[in-house]
Length: 120
Image 1 (cartoon, one colour):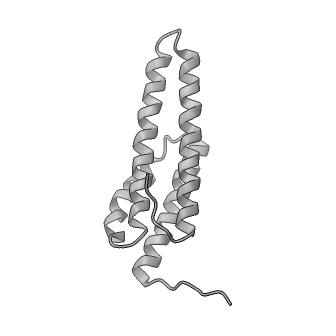
Image 2: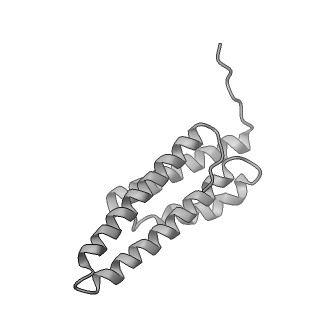
Image 3: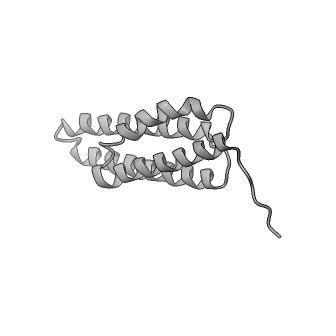
């Protein structure tokens, strides 16, 4: 017989928010290559304090760090793209950043569904 984990309303709400924010970041990466991720990012900053003291709090930090590092690598790609010799390398950086972001989102949502905190 399996045991069912029961959360208080605050934790349940925080987990639901985190799930939808992972989905928002994921949709942004697939449909706009991350350009629209600033919308769920803002919500991550707003909802992070509401999840303090729960395992969900670490997920907001995970998504926030994922966004900013993804942005850094996209900017590095653009700097490389500005040089003729760096264009092939820029594409490599962009593809690598995109795959890394997908990995972070999948790992994050999987860990969230396992009701566990996430860390680097």
